[in-house]
Length: 223
Image 1 (cartoon, helix red, strand yellow):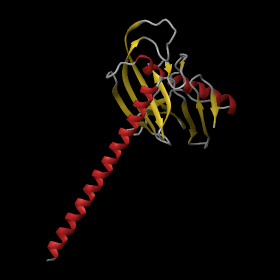
Image 2 (cartoon, rainbow, N blue to C red; image 1 turned 180 degrees about the vertical axis):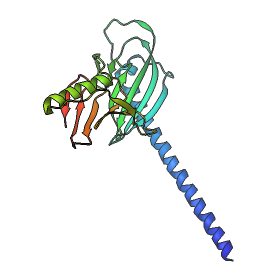
Image 3 (cartoon, rainbow, N blue to C red; image 1 turned 180 degrees about the horizontal axis):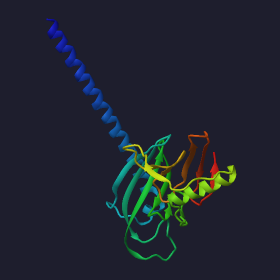
Image 4 (tube, one colour; image 1 turned 60 degrees about the horizontal axis):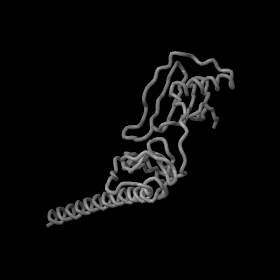
């Protein structure tokens, strides 16, 4: 009798866990669907698609979340327009011909905070993005080392050994650690076209600890 009760209790517990997992999965799927719908609504109501977007050309290419607080949801969508260009092109000379576009929409707490088409057009603010010179990771490292060396009269060593320390399954960001003797330089940055680099510099012997940011145009901002 006790064995039967034990088996029944185990069965009820198992069913409860399964139901909870299914419910959580269903809730997450619904949340993802809601995020995608926000992105689709923004695209369809935006000036570019409203002007000459081609119906049934919209395809969701990707959806992922960035590790941040609050979480950033990024939806990448492909769509076609009947003419080249972006935004409301009424009254301007535009080349006729079906043109494919990709828009990357970032959503935070249900609000669109960024929407970039073809890496060239800011759909949220209706303006063209002025290209910047890309600041390489190693350039950012040297800029910040020069800054700290001058500000704190430090003679940094050379021959840095690098290792990737990005957490497993982290999407949309990277972390690189450089080590030379007692010195460690850790640089984290989002995987975007023009990233800002978050930097910490530590010396395990002296206890020196510095943190700051290198902007995409090479400016050092100390925390």
